[in-house]
Length: 385
Image (cartoon, rainbow, N blue to C red; front, side, top):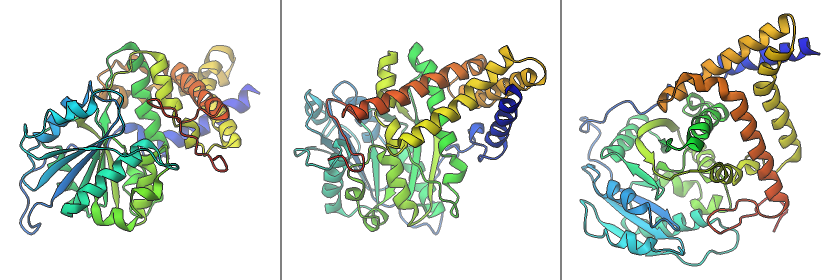
């Protein structure tokens, strides 16, 4: 049996390392620094940033200041939609009106209608308000993201050069607390494994993904895609939007240091809740896909170290080599987060944590508490009212 498991594991890791778009190399990044518009590109297009915010009083000022101080040379403005917050989010945002280089508008969100997630309903209202000025692009960003001064310029430049309908930056997540150091790099690693960024940008490929913290969308493409209403109940809204937009034109997603999330995850429970919110939705609420995912994670991440420790003969050596390959594949992501490469050898244990969180997500759904976030529960599986 150990010989069969060793052969299967070797095949899995050969595919992951050699055949899945080099996801683990972290090469798709925003390393090109923007410069003035080149001749022939015309004037800088107009951009409106739309920021949905619910209970973000502690973070939103830093986020908005970074938007209001953008060095973008074209027309740029910011709209915040207070999504029925229970704290002083609206007042915190309103205190910055008139304080930056660009206009800021704070809207009071209307009550959440049936069939919508809170974030998408807030985005829908903000985009509706933005449409009054007919912007060329919409920057959809979260209230916990702090942007470098050239973020908008870089995204617009990249979009114009590539004819993109969507350009998204995967914000650097906070990685300070022990819980964050254990989970955050692996989260980015697994996301790239699911959606290799080099495949996302392929115009002839079906892989589509985005990172909801920072997305520049061409406004006319969003209208053609049916607007935000077309994905109104999606828990994984960024990837759902990317899938619709890729049917219209090319998209791009890359790692970045320009956009940084300042949301803290101090405890394992906080990380678990963040992952559990959408993990089962990613599996389309399918028990069969859940079982297949658990089996695949056990074979991919748990079996190699088990072989290395428990198996004798060549299967044990194969397990040791695969464990080393697993750790090595994690190193580029660890370097991106400035952590020691030795963390790579902990990947089997970290993967088991994520497997438990996926099971927890399914259990929450069964208990009709799926998608719980900031006091709201979104149960939107097929056939569930």
